Image (cartoon, rainbow, N blue to C red):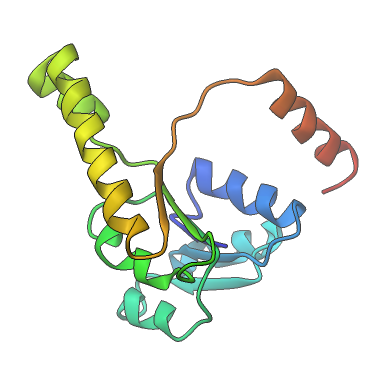
Length: 154
């Protein structure tokens, strides 16, 4: 699992959770946060400020899952780091949903967002990877699962 923006709020949580689920975790953050990432369980820590991040990541084995907390230009190259035709998935937390709603209104904003996610999903599916946007909401059963992990020291 590759986590871009690993030292932020969602990233620090994601590092711990996917590590507790048994994944090998590669965390991308600044050098200042590398010690924290190791303490949280990251197996590999990449400093995005120490050269071309894309080139650094290309030297590693391909990933099964990427969580992108950064957005921007990362979407243009990060999907190439996934194992093709294996069920590998790229998930971004950065969506145009709110921007579209503010700019176009509720109905047109939702329509534009639907068209965007649909076209990106199909485009990347033809390239052999899954593309998703993530939205978060509270979930009692999920919080119960997390409580069990915390209670067991994971």
